[in-house]
Image (cartoon, one colour):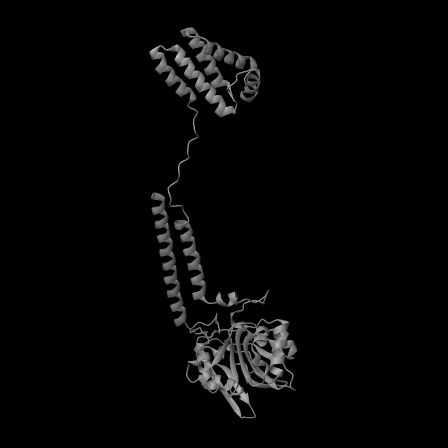
Length: 409
């Protein structure tokens, strides 16, 4: 009972510690949500912090004829194989990430998807070299920093519209730019704060790639400052507003290294803090159940003691009873009956004839010398033939029987 109480107290303490940790974590999350620091921007559609893309995601239905936006949580190759709509033209696909990690199959699927007449918008800080090689451009990676004061961070240009406008805010500034492009298929649509090209359109087949090296223009902090929401409208205006389907990629924004092994749905679930907390809480509850309910509640059944041979005690008791009456013959007769009963039950021998064969068999089974067994049987014969038994004869018979009981197997 004391151990059980101790386990309960330990479980309660662990539960309280977990809850305090969760509350502390929630407090930290609230602090981060109010912060304007963007060093660790997630570009996630569910992130309402400064570096999240919640505002951009919620604005998409207004920009694309009120289409419901489909969230993609798998690599592009898997999505292209699963979504049959992407095999037909007229779809928009938007992908945000700090660094893009693809595989050869992903790049092949992207090229095929755009070739069929779809529009793929990529906004990343660091471009994947596999895709850059396929689209024949090179990128110079610049440093990203947050000055803390309003600064021009993005300019959009297009002589065909004509368009020439710039946007500024006090958040993170992207410094990467394109150092080489294929001018036969590529058009520059925007520059960074150093007037270097960082937003291009690449024609491929019947569709287009739109590649921006400034994903911060999709963040909450940027779009909610002044009239910067127009920058989102400007970038996405190159994609058809009557697209058949609009896809928002929520896979690559969570990647921090190159893909390894097969993709699983479990990886998607583990991205979200709520799911991770639910998993650890379930593990804790399982451990508590094992500790408290795994212990056997039934009282331990005591060992059943082995049966004790009470033959000697019985003989002594009977002997004392008949000895007090001083009926030696009757007492010897009872002792003989009990001995023969013992031999029948223990050695499974017929005691009707105490002959030579009986002596030899009993000697072998009881591991007693044949001479001692023969002496015991001879004593039985003499007592049975006698009319009276003296005290000396009774004592001698008793000693022979005791010797037999104590030395046989």
